[in-house]
Image 1 (tube, rainbow, N blue to C red):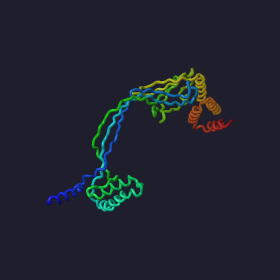
Image 2: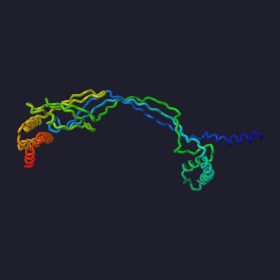
Image 3: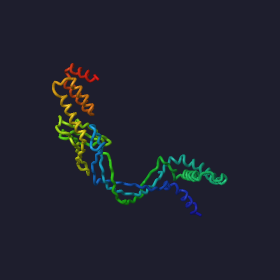
Image 4: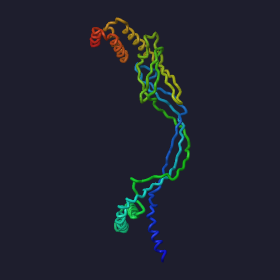
Length: 302
């Protein structure tokens, strides 16, 4: 009999060790993916073939072949609520009230024909006995501590994917015939807009036959040179417009002749070229108020 009481006391003090605070174990699947571009080709989309409009809108893209390697890792994690002494000041009194309450609910569930949800009874009972135990804190999402227990990784089968994406914010050099080159850049969607007349220097003797694009390389994508053919009718319009522009640039030209040239450029389909020419000539005559006034009047006349 002398050992019965010490053994009973030792059993009663076991919960006080606070060793039963684990809430649950969970498994997480984590994937890591590595992509390597092995081949890339620059593409350009144009509104027509060949180019037939003086205002060209080009959409650049790149076709890529990517080697995809993936690794899957199964991570086992323990989740626990660390024991904290001050929480027992409210947990134990709560447990004293909750234990008989949920024992009574469990016993009377048959009287309610099983209408009380089982989850409510189970969760309430677990809370009640955990709160009553002074060596065990109830589960708390606010203080939940997670600890990795183990992990196991495996490589998944590699694969290749073909991806087409817009060549956004990319610099390119454009030129037309033997004219000067011009640097432009695509926007965030890979599009670039240009008026072909701006690419001509002077008045060429022959109509340009192709628009040349030079795109710098990057990574697996090599530098590319693309030539887009120009329709004969558009080439003739470009030469005509260039001659009209050069005639309007001659020294001593009258405001009326300039106005007629601007109207003709508009009619040929080069409004951007007309606006650029007008700005250029106004800057040249910025001290000649009479010339500028006459140009305004000539442009207003029908």
